[in-house]
Amino acid sequence: MTITRPGFDLLGHRGARGLWPENTLAGFARAMALGVSAMELDCLVTRDDVIVVCHDARLNPDCTRDARGQFLEGAGPPIGALTFQQLQAYDVGRIKPGTGLAAQFPRQKPIDGTRIPSLASVLDLVKASGNKDVFVSVELKYDPTDSSLPTPEREPYATSRRPYSRSTGSPVLHGRGRRRGDAAGDPTPARSPRTARRDGPRSP
Image (tube, rainbow, N blue to C red; front, side, top):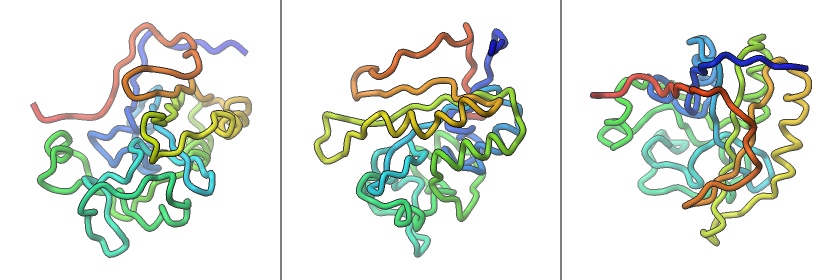
């Protein structure tokens, strides 16, 4: 199968985090409705080996609330220390007012009740949308310099996305691992010569 890509990609960064909560089903759905041609997302692995879509190795207190609806006081537990079910107790649908993240994305619209999704649910969302033009760029997060964080094997990532890339019109664009301080992982296939990243509007 030959896939022809346009010379210019409109990339929804973590969905479109300047407009909606990052790396969430609601954010990805709205990014596709907005008309992006590619979406970038980040993945980590829970304690029970569920691949989830999340940028930060630990729960981010600037956008994470507990079961009582209170923002975390400091950095939360590592994603890898929680089961997927435990992770679902946290709400990531709103930025904490007064934080640097709030200043960076003042137009992000909160969606209360939003949870960290599994990678499978995001790829199912893309498939169910019927959008055969959007590509999904998966970045695999790990940090071997931090002994408190697990370093997952790559094979589960590859296995999880293989059926989607083969059977849908929205194939995963690439998988990439990144170490702190350098880029590492599988070689990235050739991409369009120009890519626009869509976080959404930012403050001047």
